Length: 560
Ligand code: TEU
Ligand code: CA
Image (cartoon, rainbow, N blue to C red; front, top):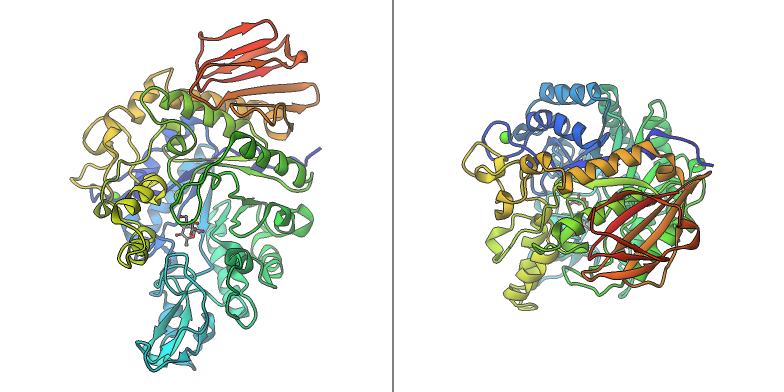
């Protein structure tokens, strides 16, 4: 069996602080806002909170550009507010993991400010500086040192006048990459980790952590290479993670989850196998990204392809590694708009179906704020409605260069842009969804807040919230839903996802109709005596002889 661990049994809830709850009317969510809503989270039943970055930042990328790791972002409050929030979390027997963004810092971090000053500055080697290639017709007389692209469009190199060299930034210009090959950088990171662990945080979600070890010599990318894979597999990645585990994490009882971009399923055990002493968990994006092609383009996918991902996971991850289950976060569009059907007819049942899946598959489930209400994508119609640096830079690179029409770009960003999930939480039916008492939230609230909001859902026993609450309680109550084996009963079925979770003589059967039509599903023989535990469309079901009649987007959980 599996070694029991609290982070395997946890139900995690991600908070994007900027969008969660504004307590002082400046239009920006804050830590006191989170503290106000801890009772709400406790009522929902989640027991670990992942907090997106709360540190001092100029917010080029909403806090993923950190200026001071040991200070709270002033818009979010003070260290005293943080301590109060943490105490409130502990009081409710919940835990907190915070975002560790250490592949890069802000260009306003004191390390970088020093580093940029001169080639001999003691902080010079905290970052990655290189000479450009002389080119008299280039803006500064130089082309970038190599052909690396940035995730946020354009070159990954920025020229810096004081020393006439370029620095590497795999993300925004204001996010210079740290040089992890410098032992002083690593010690500085371990020290800031200890700072927060000593305060009592329970672990970290680690931003783009596989990118910390760069390719020796930084040679040009060969055209056609999958650069994310290359960057994720630098020669010292595991050595640095093992060192971090030993020097920073091992004295504490932590949960660590790495954002494993560029890591294939087969390579995951290198990072998460217990015997490797690196991280506990990683996010694998195969399922979440199945509907998306390059940039913001859509990709066709089928249910059998989707289901195969989970079977592969069950096969590859051994008894000594543990999976995560999620389909949404602050970088992805809304859950129900992407994997369900957010029309008036099917929004509620399909949102409930998706929560059913996430809370009964094998692995630690991660829910994103607002999913428990069935919040939807924002009805974007024009560029000025977006705030995200990724959208703005992609617009410059694609539309302003004539590669794509403005209309098509906005349509694609509407479907996949990150701001879909960053619109404020919809707390009630008052103006701005009760997110702020001030006039203007930093990003517009989805106009559907009058219909979709927490106040009405908490009161309504048929709401997505009430159903998610029941699912979370079920997940906590039954070890089979945590540690049970997983078996897909009908991999080829292109409408129904049906699987069992089995531990000893406890067995659950989950049947999900991933379609907008009614269908019949053949009972597995041994299930005849099963008891219906939860149904997202109660009272509607027909159970014929040997067949289940499923309504559109119906989800059922049986126990036998
Ligand atoms: O995201 C890393 C990442 O791979 C993103 O580029 C993501 O794939 C993309 O935004 C999807 O459109 C992490 C954080 O989660 C993200 O919010 C940050 O912007 C990024 O790192 C830089 O810190
Ligand atoms: Ca505020």
